[in-house]
Length: 163
Image 1 (cartoon, rainbow, N blue to C red):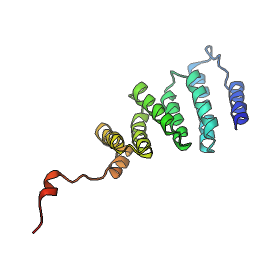
Image 2 (image 1 turned 180 degrees about the horizontal axis):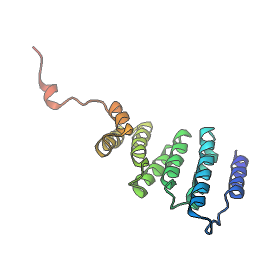
Image 3 (image 1 turned 60 degrees about the vertical axis):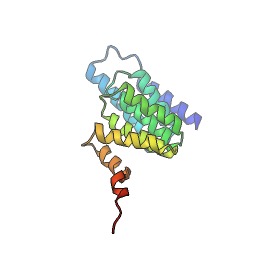
Image 4 (image 1 turned 90 degrees about the horizontal axis):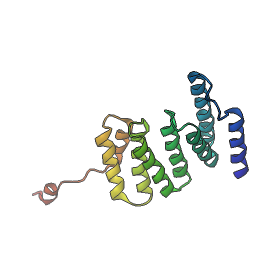
């Protein structure tokens, strides 16, 4: 597994050289996108270790890219799928904290709720699901969060007795 990760990183350096400052912006964007897509292929093939290493490299090389938040999200997703829930929490919080305007903010907040659920912290999970609904009410993530949140009966309803 480690050898495969190393081979992938070497291939990434060969095909996507770091020193591209003289390249035209469009060419840099194309190269950045190709690198991101290459790492995404590793994720799609369920090679989460290689994908995680690739996304970390991507962030190192392209921290100012619009795709940096996505790469950070996918690091968390790799960790989540490998059941490294504490690490996943850190990665998803990093997206929410460092890239608050990213399209991945809603997905990261939802994943925080799902990760807390896996860890058995249902109270914090509920807070995260509520946050998704409150902050991103029209998003697909809010729809998922609404389905997860169980309706809590009001105190009044529980004190009313039927005849």
